[in-house]
Image (cartoon, rainbow, N blue to C red; front, side):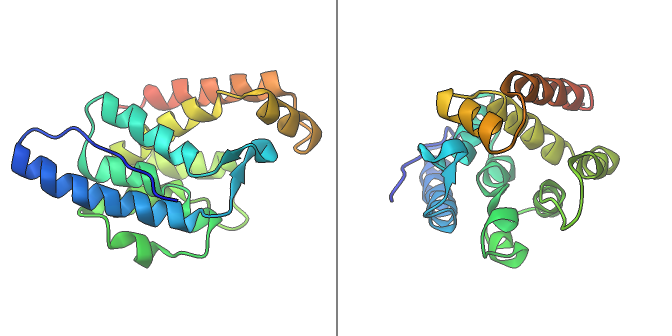
Length: 173
């Protein structure tokens, strides 16, 4: 399913090149998440990384930060590997951020958060913060899924995500 994203970039030539590059990342992420749905099956999964991308773009972030936003769940939730995603990343910070944002097998959320914060990778911290903020927004289907499938109180989960975002924000430089 084609998704069109038009990022904001300073110069016209850079804008034209980056739109093409970013569109290829969007297409890759959308194809990677094809068939996946989010919380209760109402929304296609790609909408989540697209919202994280959009929030970061609207706050002036560019380049690998936006790429990581789009790819942050690809390795964890699809058949694709870090090597597949690395093709789209330009910096070692971006590659490290993607690895930090991917929960390892058997790793708890708290352990992953410790890895992210311990790394001091500002890109990973920032993307995780926006990821948490997006996760804190639940529609009725998301609330029902959280309650009935995850067996968690939706209001507590929303607060947990808001608190996580607040904690992460305190580590940003």
